[in-house]
Structure formats: structure tokens, C-alpha cells
Amino acid sequence: MAAFALQQGSSPVLENQGAAAIAVGLGALATGYAQRGIGSAAVGAVAEDDDVFVPALIFTALPETLVIIAFVTIFIAQ
Image 1 (cartoon, rainbow, N blue to C red):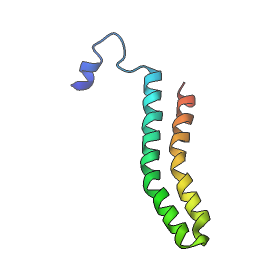
Image 2: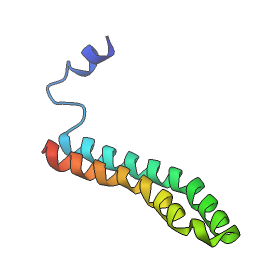
Image 3: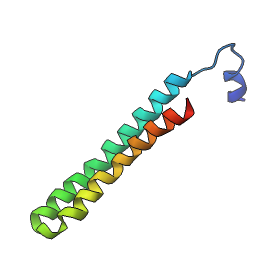
């Protein structure tokens, strides 16, 4: 019923550029939320033992792929 109510107007509720902006924005927020915990844990682990620097760096950079995937999705969708 809600989808029908949104489609009654002559123009779409959200244009392509608006949807792309929301996708990138939510991806960036999710990345920041994930890196908040991972970054602090990685710094603590490296402070305890220098041998975990490389895995900590990889785990810290892993959430950034969310934003990269959002950008790629935008360029593919347009």
C-alpha cells in the first residue's frame, strides 16, 4: 500500500543522484562505525605486541572497501 502511495505522483520520490548520494553516505557512515572499534583495538594490540602490526593494518583498512564498493556501484548504475 505504501509503495502504491509513493507511485501516485508524476515524478519519482528519489532521483538517481539522490539515491547515489544516500548510498555513498550510508557506506561512509558504516565505514566510520566499523573503524571506530577496529582502530582502537588495533592500536591497543600493536601497543602490546609489535608482531600484529600488519594484521591490524589490514583489519583497519578492510571496512574502507564499503565506500569503494558504493562508488563503483554509482558508476555502474549510471
